[in-house]
Image 1 (cartoon, helix red, strand yellow):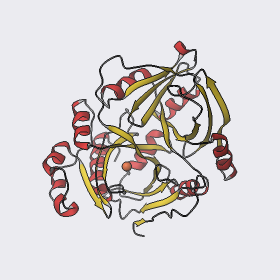
Image 2 (cartoon, helix red, strand yellow):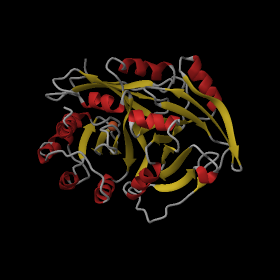
Image 3 (cartoon, rainbow, N blue to C red):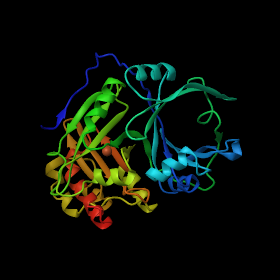
Image 4 (tube, protein in one colour):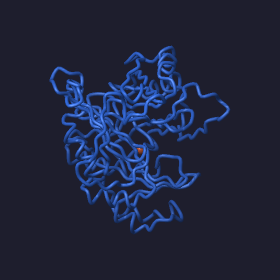
Length: 374
Ligand code: FE2
């Protein structure tokens, strides 16, 4: 099997309209400190808060924003809470990939009638700023999709949250929106979840990568990318493939204790500035050797950026039939080798950097080697 790119037909009706990513919520061990990390390093603004001070007794949540990217960091205040159990099992990780919809009740009913497992029945929540309708369905692992209908709401985030602002100066790094969110699922489960997104949420299969595309000497994985009707939501789904040693996907599944979100790709219009600033703030990126840059001119042709700048910042570049893209990957951002970030700048390219897979996986293997998990 070879890599295939399928262009979705615009004549097909969108059976599950989604306006975009609403937010990504992480369940973490210490939301207060995690919030400082995202403000101080990634330059997020603190915009809203919910916790005991706002009359919410069991959990605390910090809302952070930059461009259209909205993260929510939630911790439990008692050990028997669902959030505490989630963190005990998975470590810090993504619990909610929230989708912005016009009608959360209709979306929920459509998804459930097509086979989705309900997580939260549609219900309306209100405060002085208006009201929202929320519903949720399960996806891979313990991850859920919250559906958020917010046209009748003009508060800071959701009812119950109060506005907050940074208590120290922050430096935004130019993050614009969530480009894609990648899930790792267990061996043999990729096609089941691709079918889930196709059948239940009306997504299209965009690209297929097999183990010949994504293999190094030691490890391999398979990946399929699904995308919603308007193309704003892209979910690549990975599963491990047979290799000589333990793949990065197997390492993730072992440490996350099951399927879950592997990485979130955040888009920028100026990756040189974004990465330069992130590095100065102490964000750790995967290292790719200088030899990677030797064949860049012949592989990708003319680009606007100076190769020396890319080399200095260790940014990767790839070209497809529509243009080129620049990308870089952080190391995991919590103690377990699970969730990490991709910073991506698209200059026409609609793909995911296939030309970088080998260099990238070798970089991850070097990290696995150090952790003793290869
Ligand atoms: Fe990615």
